Length: 234
Ligand SMILES: [Zn+2]
Image (cartoon, rainbow, N blue to C red):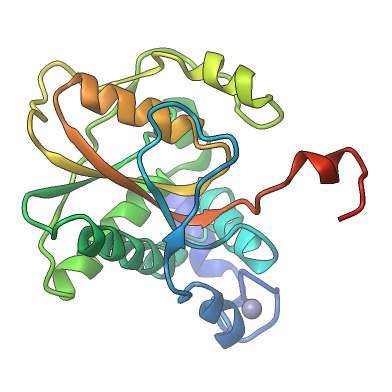
């Protein structure tokens, strides 16, 4: 993490990152949103190859602010509560899919430019916190940065589902020097929207011989039905 980022986090007044009220980094009400029971979070439509997605909460209201504060505003202390929510989701995944034996938690990689701009890698920081929480809970899993970008990818925001898939096709890879053959992988990311990034990450890991058992995220965007977009009444 950059020095300036760390300093900023120390100097910012302790207002809740979710609702903006004092006196703490997270008020009780916003922290409570992060302790919901993990649930499946299938996008609609489901991209090809998407591993079964699980999420801790819904990407709306204070959760959006908390994730943005961690990711973009350098409030790195949020890695712990976010990582704990992610860790609980991974734990649910492992209970559902045959235990932690040999499981590896792999984050969707952040682009190098984004890491430079932000001064830290929020997804990896959160992954480390999740793995630490799992060890404390008696589930010794590994965290591994097993993926990297093969080429630059345009920002996914604002692209249609089809364009997102095209933008991402073949974008990620496991470095050839890293052997992930036979590893049982839980993919992790902060937010699942269309699922196309997680599907591409799973493709790259499977191509390298890993078994991707599921994906876990902190938050999932609420599902929007086409009927609503076209103005029809529900
Ligand atoms: Zn709050």
